[in-house]
Every structure is written in C-alpha cells, then in structure tokens.
Image (cartoon, rainbow over all chains, first blue to last red; front, side):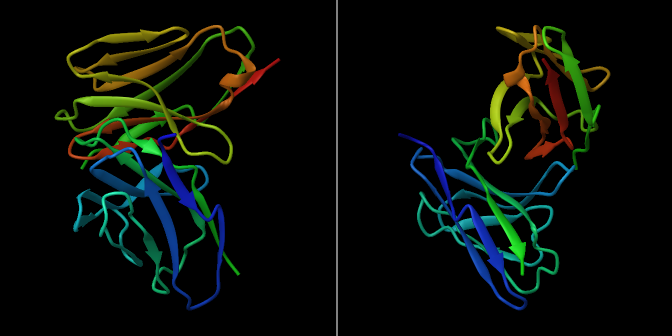
Length: 112
Length: 109
C-alpha cells in the first residue's frame, strides 16, 4: 500500500528541546517537502529536497533543519531556535516538477 | 515570488446547492493550478488540477476554470453532499507550489 507515513501523530516539546518529526514514503518519489500549517492560514514551505543528499530552504526555514540521506526518508528537526513551534506539520512527496503532491496525515506539535 | 489569494474564507451551502471558491495569483509565469481537499486531522488530497494551456476541466461534480489574462481560477462543486464538507486549498506553481489560505466549506443537510 503506497503512501507517506508521518510519525508521531502528536508530539510535545519542552522549552529548549529539539524534536524530530519522521516522514517516510514508499512511492519512489524523488522530491519531498515539509510544510507548516497554522489555523486559518495556508501551507507554508519549510524545506524541500529534489534529490537524495540535497535540500533547499523554503519560505520559513529558520529554526528548522532537515536531512535527506535516503530517498524514502526526509526527517524534520524543530530546534530550540524555533520560538513558536506549535503547528500542524505536513510532509509531502512528488514524482518531480513540484506537481501532484501527495501528503502524509500530519504531525501536531505542541509546546508544554 | 508567487502570491495566491483565496476567497471566501468560509462558505456554508445547503445540500444539493453549488459551491464556488475563487483564487487569484500574481506571477504570470505560473502554469499549474491544483486544488486540494483537507478533512479534519488529515493531510490535503489533490482533487483536481489544471494547466495554463487549458481553460476548464471537469471531473464528475467538480470543475475548475482558469482565466490566464485575469490571473484567476475557480473551483466549482455541484450538487453538494455532506461529505464535501472540508477545507479546500488552491495553489499555483512557478518554481514551487504556493498555497492560498483555504476555504472552510460546510454543507448543511
């Protein structure tokens, strides 16, 4: 059953803590993306990767980091430098060309 | 970069009526315009898309129209049903997808 798996579904961060959100896909897609969603707002691009071992900053990359060591995996770390991390985080992948994105079911991150 | 504006932010319709959501974009180089549907607690799902060389596309009860000159595109849902209740996002693609802020559609039984 092909798709994108995000885990965990809910995550809580303590002050000063880094947390990592997992994203795995078995669609054999080259491109992967991380978006942040806040209530009443559209999706804002954090980071994207068009190919393994390469990634670029999106519109709101400050306070976040990523890695792309495997084609299937694109984890996102929310660092302590991100002062307002509470949001719904969505991972997506595409076969290329920034089109026809397939999204995971999201991770809700909250601050304790 | 691309700027996508979406209206209305909320839309309530009677079951069986039509729903229309409108988006405008700023970058005339954008050439791909998808629409996504997001149900509560889930990720968005692509429901229909259109390219800049096409003016209209239909898929059963949903249709999308594109006016390149005016730089706007619209989603039309006919014969709405309760399962159409969701948040709908438009997007436009220059070198990356830029999303509108979303429209919460509620279909009243």
